[in-house]
Image 1 (cartoon, rainbow, N blue to C red):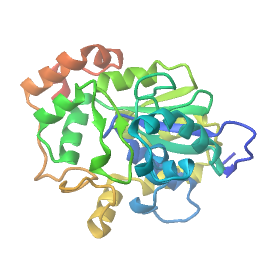
Image 2 (image 1 turned 90 degrees about the horizontal axis):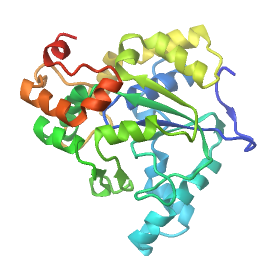
Image 3 (image 1 turned 30 degrees about the vertical axis):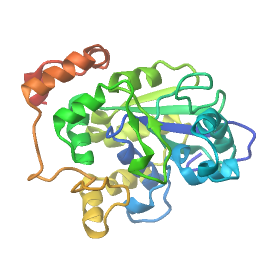
Length: 294
């Protein structure tokens, strides 16, 4: 299979594109969108697909048949795993993809949003937590110290008051998030490092297509890589904006030279103290000097 086909409903078709925020999820979706696109020009950043359907209020209300305002928070939370089952049954194409930042929690668990048996597979993106801290701070227009604290908060949510079109998303700490997805046994998983996708884009995309059981077309592959470079996304944002940019942030696609900041030794030490076990497990250096020289 070179591209997507119509979903017959006879088999599971839904892949989760999962990550802690600011770990490369948007870049991955741009790559895949350009691979599947039949046009010979870069897909616009405001038109990329594979959105976070799991947390869209309008989809949840379609599932409910009533407004969220008419039910209690307790009932809403109780029904979220059933909603994920319903959502999996609505997919028009196989394979289908859904971005997600939630932790991978099932019915009966606190903050659960998933049902068992609906996942075709998982693509999990991981990024060095120091780089996540810098990017997430820029994205939220917060200080790096505030962001490091958020990344260590085991009760952290992306709350719906930030975006009334979304549901609350439980993400927890960076380490929690990585472990709950990477240790799951619900579905086959492909773990991709953002650093590898960025530095070896073509080979990373080819590996991903193999995992997805999608025949790799060489011309589509080259086109996707060429059309998905950061300069193209930045120019599109400069010319037309990006609808998912956080209010108050200067940009979504990369910090400019005037915005660029480096993490301090004290901040890096705090990140290592918070996340050393997971950093070591995924071969991220805990040495500050080694980090800044990369």
